[in-house]
Image (cartoon, rainbow, N blue to C red; front, side):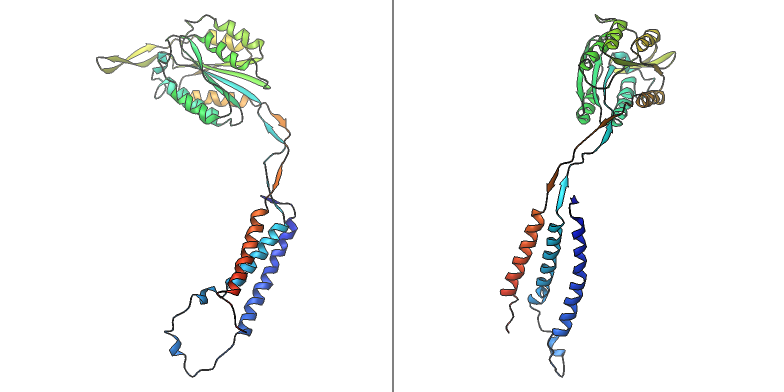
Length: 327
């Protein structure tokens, strides 16, 4: 809340001499009665009026304070101003094939990817961000949105087995492109994360990359998985047995995708490396645009005026009823 005439607030300082005057007047105006002994009054019950004796003064002072606030014209205002925003639309293309259950990243590749993606989204509160999931086929888990609470909830629900298994990298890119192609954002980005080699889908990864480039969309690719082999949980007779499976990431294709679509390729072999990758992409995608915003103010004096009126009314009632004095 702001005040249009804040200089009137200095009038509140007048309450100080008013309070001092009231204290001095009470001491000098009270009648005295000479008695030989006051012990008899020690056990005399006190009336509730003794506790209300200063109520008119307090109400009057409060009313004066509220009148000063009304004169200062309190106003509420929207926080609109000249500011800068990122102006970036981002689609996260996340591989949810069953190979993402490998546990070379902890607790597994998919959960590690979801955790780091969540941190990335939390660090960009003003961007439109969406999520595409792909395995043997692809679908949009969440379209572009600034409602990141909904977005994070949907990312949390992503799991292996939601769609046909496989790795359709081209379909994942194409699906993300379909969400970004009509965007008016200054910068449009796809961040694709996978742990395998394209083996399904009707669109090849490089064709999808060419389509992305034609719409001015950059594609960053991330290959996730350690070097060599990775422990993979395999169900056997109601139990889980771990087998070491080879890590086969088509780094050549992922690099070509990034080159064609003006992006970069990264390899994440651990949780910390994956976090570093997202942090680097976060630093690269910082396209600032200036936004001119206008302020709208609303007068908010009504409440203070009502309080002042009620204080005056209550003081008058007290003086002419409970605290009425006989001349």
